[in-house]
Image 1 (tube, rainbow, N blue to C red):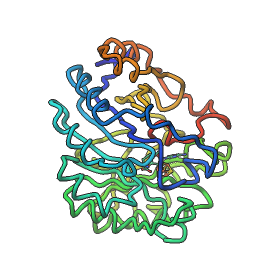
Image 2: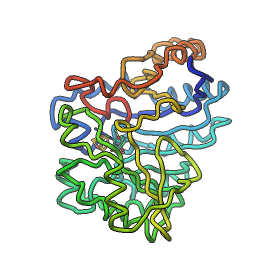
Image 3: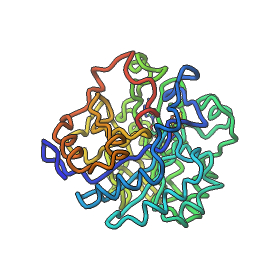
Image 4: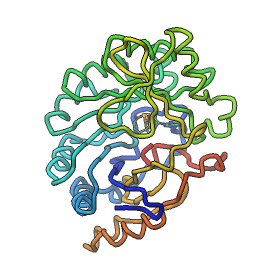
Amino acid sequence: MRDQFGRSIEYLRISVTDRCNFRCIYCMPERGIEWLPKPQILSYEEITEVVRQLAPLGLRRLRITGGEPTVRPELARLVGMLRAVPDIEDIALSTNGAKLPQLAEALRAAGLDRVNMSADSLRPTRIAEIARRDLGFNPVAAAQAATDAGLDPIKINVVVVRGINDDEVEDFAALTLERAWHVRFIELMPVGDLAGTEFERVVPSDEVLARISARFGALESAEGPARGNGPAAYHRIAGAAGSIGVITPLTHTYCDTCNRVRLTADGRLRTCLYGDHEMNLRDALRAGAPLAPLFAQALANKPREHELLKLRVGGLKALSEVGG
Ligand code: SAM
Ligand code: SF4
């Protein structure tokens, strides 16, 4: 599967719900989000059918995301169904981690390979402020539960927001000293309630890395985790067990190596995180039509790069709408 610019597309991010048990200040507004009506949401059988039809075309890697995927009941059942599709080599989950201690074992047993967990603070009060919910989320305990269940690698995603959690960059980096976790710092993208404030709020990745090396010494460049290397560039504190990554949608775009497309919870295929390049797969699926021609058409229109820097207030209401 190649797009119009010759990029090989082998990775699908599947949003299984637009709902979430958090309301992160940088992702969702507190109010005013309309949830998708249930009949519009793809069933697990329909999601699996999309994957079954795309696997022969070259689809190899899946990520289950949302919204918060763990709020959808029986997520492990979906993992098991996707695991049974021939040629799928890698199944990952993006989660806010709140339910990981309860679910990690069952997800692993169903065939999940690995997890990316979001964590924006290590301080309980601040976690609740950023998430606008207090679910008693403990990031270190949640990542440890995933490690203990055998999920590997463990990536921890931190959205760095100036004035909100940028004073914890060094604390997050310190998590990699003893544990083989991969902590990735993400530049804030201008969506949701913080859209329009990115110039004050974005902490460029070069600044993040400079702060870490000021504390821990010069960073080595690192390979990063063996599986699932996406848009992050990796570094390592000398002698550390884990690595430090930066994801830089704003300061260094990586669209030329983009290998992914997205499936929204209601069955739209999005070929770019930003922009309106969408194809409704759900109606074709429910009508029993083959998806391969639609997929080929969507790839032929996949844009060369995202238009994030052109978007301002009034763009996406929430990153959760399109699966992050
Ligand atoms: N609920 C899951 C989670 O939080 O990991 C999966 C969905 S979430 C939309 C996917 C990723 O998008 C998370 O790592 C989250 O931190 C990130 N994200 C959300 N809003 C963002 C923003 N405005 N800028 C940068 N990253 C953002
Ligand atoms: Fe929910 Fe994830 Fe968005 Fe936070 S970043 S509101 S956890 S979807």
